[in-house]
Image (cartoon, rainbow over all chains, first blue to last red):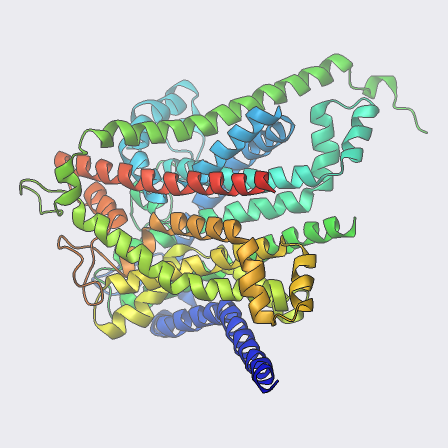
Length: 313
Length: 291
């Protein structure tokens, strides 16, 4: 009797300890996020003091005079990300559409293959980009675009390049984020109630009309969520971009020009960083983190909306 | 019912044509994506396979010109850094997952934590490196493999947390209730009953997280850095690892031999990551068919 009484008490005690340990671990997630923001804020303080808010629109990057501006890196990040989305969204949408309706065996295998594309480490994309894609861009793609399709006449497109630069980086990013966007879109398409699609087919819609007018309208928030997930990945990708962007701190002149992104600037300058430059890197990290957090929050918001929509049913 | 005027009706032929074109484009996009992957994998295999040899795996990397250079130290360093990250990141992540699934379901705090973990999952890995650089590398006075492990643990934490929660929520409530009705404590129920029946899923989540961080490069640039030595000073000095070796050889070296070694290292990393990924998929699938 006495014995079992003790066990009950001790098990109540371990229960409490366990619960506290679990809650403590769970709280690590928000605490680490907060610590990250605070640390980057504190670390970047000297940079803000030195350059003020003008840091955000400064275009100079002069380690000799210790003058730094964030604008080239920010613009480079936004440009590569926007181009990557432009290249990745249409194929992600149509592949997801096709895979959801594909014959089960083939659809399964191809979906798995597409997921594996997301598993390849980014440094491998970088290697491939540097040694394979850059020469191909220089020798074949860029001359073809400029001379055969006459895209060189379009302002800002660029006429001749050395293979490095924004266009190449965006292409690699597009390939990297395509599987992420496509995976979310596949889930969204699968969530569309069968009765909606069947009704559309029933009134004589073609598959494409069903997809664009019914499935897309129904799952638009989920699709946006998927796009923002891809956007977040492209925003912070470092290695694949670092290898092929050219790493010149300058505002983009055209799509073939070499440039930089926030992540690439961080990776490039960390080794010799101290003093003001170190604070500048922390400031760039803070900007990147805030951008990424904003994008993630929007993504979570949209995805939560579709989750709620599913819950109602 | 309004009737669409005849001249605004889309002809059946045109609609079918558009449908067919989109179908063709879908397949083309799929071929492009899978073809891109095949191109990358083929390049890695074709260029990496020729340098693989026993010596390549057991000899350490050496400065250019030295004979018999390999990637042994980097391989060992990657394993040490990744296992260190797993040891630090996985236990709290699983506990946190248990909390969300067993105690925090539908509570405000639970939702807030889930949201934070989701946001953290999309955080750029380079920022994690920067953070650990600030809180560990600067105070400790130098780069270390341990700092690399901390940065990777940081990235693993939200991934394992979310998969743990998802897997535990898949366990039927009746099992939970039976255990509690038999007089098990919440802790015992969670650890002995729920976790055990979700074992396959938990292992999958852990392996996927390991696969995801074992190819991570950006955070290691700020923390573990790189060295030609064997990883003896994991806690105190720069530690060799495969991803940074690849980066060094590819971007900072003009020599053909080192490029080749970089491809060899790329092949090893790719095989490692793909093997982990594919085995996860197989484990998880078997588990689900078994049910």
